[in-house]
Length: 269
Image 1: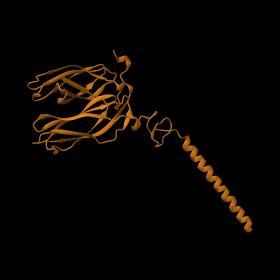
Image 2 (image 1 turned 90 degrees about the vertical axis):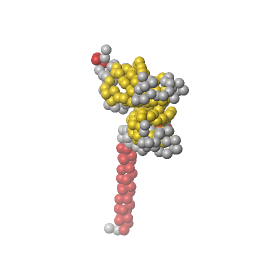
Image 3 (image 1 turned 120 degrees about the horizontal axis):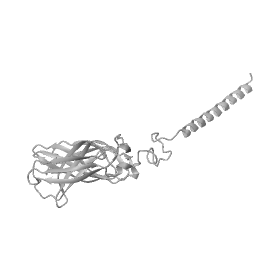
């Protein structure tokens, strides 16, 4: 075979190779673009307003959300060397919550020296609510807790909340505070006005003086409260508050991210 024919053959093979490569690349691009957008593909596509967030995705874009507001954090003495810690927090997002956040409490004495080991925990965040994060029985030994610093450690990963959970589902009725001068006792009735059954419901009680400052806190749990049912809750303190009492605030919390079945309409009276 002549040199000229050899060169011609090579050129033809090169041209065919280039054409094949172009066709292959075009097919790959077509398949990639034809793939149905998802909320987990790491690409801003479909109805998303950010990468895998917003639009029809359950995850909401962080830049469209309001950060949690921590209104105050405080230690409440139970007995000598034992304190309950509370952070009072607000979520102003009407349709978004957080499935889990990690937080930390640090307790200091009057000399700004750490009075106890930092206490960490996790909790959920409801939509459109003010709520209390409660850490019980923090032991300070012979040190007196003077101030508390509360910090959210994890990213605020916002998700859409079932519209039913944007409102108050557990309503508190008839709070009664007795024995204020000796060993205070608080009771109230919690009514489930929703179409859902809840279990392990945390309920925090806060006591305020006439200056609007919280002076005591306690927490209990409702094991189970079915739809349209009411349960009594009780709180007690071993010693007098040592000051006047102006009002009480009782805060039940329900996790909007649990797999909770809705009660059949036919069973609701």
